Image 1 (cartoon, rainbow, N blue to C red):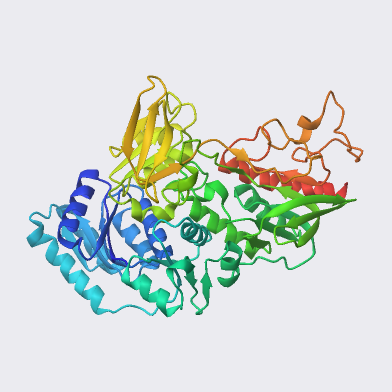
Image 2 (image 1 turned 60 degrees about the vertical axis):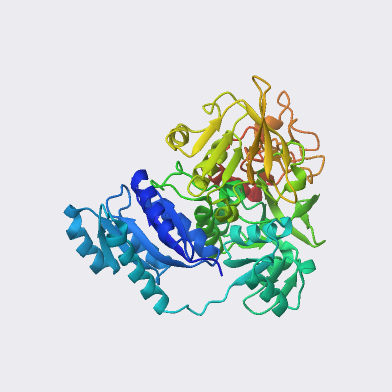
Length: 552
């Protein structure tokens, strides 16, 4: 089993570091210390910890924090880890708050700051909370368990799939005794990894993602042969369309090749989305949208890729990667974009073994006290830098441009500049990746001077460019030179409608060169690459689908 967690949250960086330092000095042998700088960040960390099936023994929260004080944080944290022992850090003037906390969230102790010396004022309190936590015993829990090599790309893929689909799991490596015991109990060997053990006792050896999805209860097969609307892609645009389509009575199915949320679902923190003044993680936003869509009647298929699109009169037929087909009156393409591959020498050989595309939150624990390098200069890269700075000893943000202002939001730039763990290196690119079985070293080059530098690094996260996933579409569906799908008036050439266009009208705003096939979100040519605009286009597309169904 992984070490139980002691989580501390304080908005004062110096106090936060001091608490974590003292706790590690005393408890690091048997417990893992996680620190956060705000209640929102701490709740996000707890969500990820719960998803991984880890245990939280103690929560230490400062009372005086902006936006969410310590009592409010502990109240919400109780829903995630009701067995964790709780303490409030207060000043002498806050004793009334401590009494309120005891009544409201059943805190075990309140600690007056400063707590020097910790041997007298901090450690005895934490010792007592840990004794109480251990005396309560371990609850009977069942979750999916994964056994694999630490640097296995296949094991990483399975773990990432489960995490992004909101499925709790426990991770064991073949290097630890418990992992080897589980392999033996499953009748498997190291040659079979990754091995997945379901809560029901099923054993999967080196499974495909569709096999994993079937076993953990995700839907992979359409319930019907014909729908009013098929949505291809489960990012913000696709989920927005699923919510509005189902709520307005359309028989709606969404087909997603990996996990709902798309790139936005991997964002560690979205600060500028309307209605979330304290920010929201991409995973939280995705989970809410997914539950909302299914509650309203939309059908969601996971781990199924659409590989072909054909039209037969007004009917649209989509071919799935397992050879099955699904038909509909209308289709919405919301496939989004993928991160461009890093052109550095050796990078392709280390994907999943130190090189990751997207934030890969499953790797957060492995980055504790390590050097992390992030490549990219847009919001997704900046959000990842802030996320990994919570646990990593140092984060290097490598940006090809001469500054961040060209592609990153102002609020995020300010956060990064105020974070002493993040080093921004502009005019910098990764030219090669090196390591024995996994990433161990990078070579960075300054594009201005041409100078190169060897950098020790075990984790590289890539957020560069945007490649549209449109190669599977038929030739008659018009795209721009970069592969993004053209829609509406962009299809008109000197007022002339596209070749093969049969309706006696111009294409609707989000309609493609194939009548009844619509596009929303990042995959659309000249779209605004923001979560809010993608959701809005998904909703707008449903309105246009209604118009198309009334007047095809």
